[in-house]
Image 1: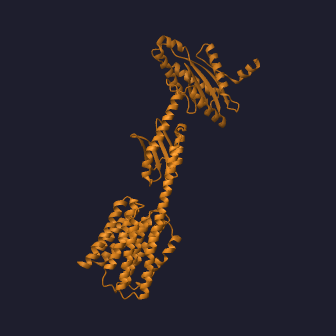
Image 2: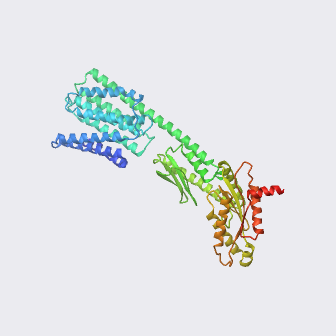
Image 3: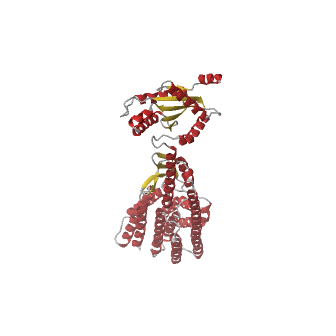
Length: 538
């Protein structure tokens, strides 16, 4: 029996170390259970083989109790006692009464120590009763109660106990409750029959053992025996009721999760990826995933560019398709339902790939394949957004149409490949001289269009001058002369409600024709003074 007692304590310690080593609170619990196992081993050795100093066994026991106390205080997911524990008052009253009966015992410190651990375990058990923590806490909570009950009974009945095996059996049951409860919680096992079967069988064995102990001693009068038997019967009923209520809550949570998962799948499947931009996709994914994964904080996608939304720190879950990492979901803590994430990952990856494919197709439709600049169709879509933004923010907007001088001569003398090379070179200069909010467009042939956000006429002319200077300062072999450009600039005012981009384009085009008529390699601008003069002539 002493060997079984030590083995049960060692098994509890092993389970805690095996599954909870990397969790601070559980590490304390593992060391505490190991010390208890050594204390039980020393105690059994002292009774069966040779005397062991009491100070050694007591030190091991109380040190283990202290470490368990630290572990219980450090446990996450605790709740203050609520009305739930009112139903347990008869059980706690029995424990208090038994401790009062053992006040004369020299071993009183043991029942008080175990009773204190039970009190420290109550907030964790309460969290489980409120479905805020794993139901394994209920099992090891029962274990601490059985241990406190065994200590109190021993303190009361020890003078009359001729056979200590029933007491040792109670302590074994206590260690088994603690060990199985910790094992279930640390492994995250839920929805199995193990807790129900173990609790019912264990509590029946505990009740039977206590009644046997009372029956064998003279300290328990018939009235006391009946009272304790009634409370123990209530303990059995209370344990089964908790199991049934907890099981129902688990099933309701599982049904709710299943419903949420189904709705999530429907929402993800119904996403119209052909109508989403990258940011729209990120927002949609976060919006739909957040109700199911509460700790989800952000998302990152990697295409030609890095796109992110929300917090990108913490636990990173990779989104992988065909062996390629498309991005990560970021969580503030490790998600509990990671198996659902694994199941959803292919669907998420498919949606992301489809969206990126649509965006790539759109980019090809809106982009000039030679220069990589926007084409006319792309300009029409992008310019509407840019004009509206300038109107809302009260910003200036300027347009510049640029033409490469004597481009036909380049094609005629050196061929279209060299001509294409010249166009690509000029496009590169344009890209380097425009800002993020500006638009650079291949307007047609050797003509290019710039739409400059927040730029008046002076700023717009300065931009074109820099482009012209860089072009004239460059040499494009095998072209033997210096390439120049002509440009017409228009606009420059703050965008009003009646602003018409087409009219502004016509003005810039007129200025380009004027620059060419005056000998090329120059910049002409459609300034307000000219506009007034033009109106007077009309």
